[in-house]
Amino acid sequence: MQPIKSDNALIMFFNGVAVLVAYGMLGLSLWLSPDVPLSTKGFWGISVLLLTLALVNFVKYRFDDRMSADRIQRLEDARNEKLLSDYVSDSDAG
Image (cartoon, rainbow, N blue to C red; front, side, top):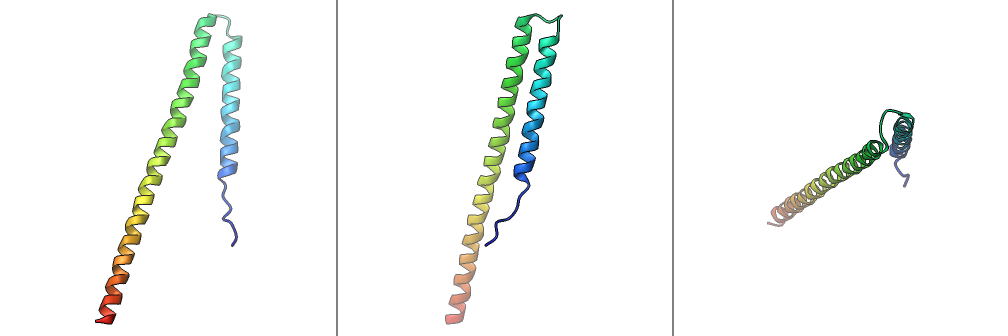
């Protein structure tokens, strides 16, 4: 059986590189900004990290919710298929 080729790994790699570049550019801009005090730079850095954590959790929970709904739908489809097959086999026997 041939595994299905997916572009998810490539897309995830590209997004990871983009996030690292964005973090690098943000860090460089904060480091080179002369008018902003160090405490404000730290606050901005922590804010960006916490925002990233919140976005990762948001995506994870949406994905988990979608997987749960898909699993429930597959169970309902299997139950309906079983009911139909039982009905057909009972009507053939009777």
